[in-house]
Length: 455
Image (cartoon, rainbow, N blue to C red; front, side):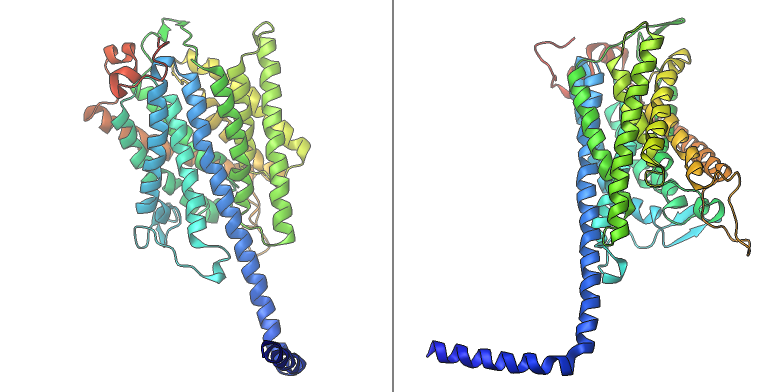
């Protein structure tokens, strides 16, 4: 009985297959188009999701780097801050940040993004080319990076809740506003053809400016400076800092690679691959340049923390344009970043700006350099080029890039100063001298990172 029924079904299927070419060719063509669109949708969504997972792991990299570069009595607090800031960033970017970064409309010529409905909620459509939540997740992990930059600079003396209050404003309003100028189609994009592929300025310099202002207002750690003398305060765990550097290096492949924002075509996936290669070579250039320069400047001694920040400086430098340069140019761009790190660290000490982990040289200074040099990949235009109709061609220029750098610096610095000053006169931004001397692990968390060896 089962055999005869199966035979009948097979004959029916064969007759249907014979009639199909006559009745359904148009339908098949439409189905093939839909299948191609779905395939690209899935590929691009996977790029966002996997890239976002990799960038999320950068939070662990920042945690390891910072915990290794602070003194042992503050390592537990630094770990807590990094976990907390990631959580705050996620909440605030969902509530308001995303819809300011990618606004429904703008005001003041694209300076201010006006959000649509808040909090964010995505609508899935094949026409977008990717799953809406995959995009939100990828964008969210970027904002946490900007906050992590601030964390390292103001370590060992900032109050936990004051710092997190600053992170609320940074991730909900300051960072999203800057992002809206370029990625959200705002002022810098429409008026200056400003180009920042993955965020040398929008992410890293934004965090760097906020960190610089915070370091100035909060002040240096107790005992760091005596007149013109700088008192070294070495980190507690160099191998942990090295691990953090490698995790950040790894994370940058998602940071830059997934910023291609699509992977469903031959050209897109090849672009992602080239971005991976260029990103790696910029880090290589940053490390080697930093090592060579420190050996020259410090009588043969190579400071490992300079090499670590050289890697990060090289990575930040290539982030504004990781696709267009050759691999050789990527090495050079990263090498300049490594040199800038080595030169800026002692400059900050001369100015008595206490940056515990060297985040300002690596993220702010290298972010500026990486943003400016984008123009070299697009014809070395001084001013933004226009076509015969007088419209911007979209190619980057030195002046257009500089406008983006300056506008970001001014706005982020002013807004950060306002927030830090409000916190200073309300909650206070700095722990007491006794707490600082005791260490924030014991004073504020009650849990020491190294209870047997704390110093």
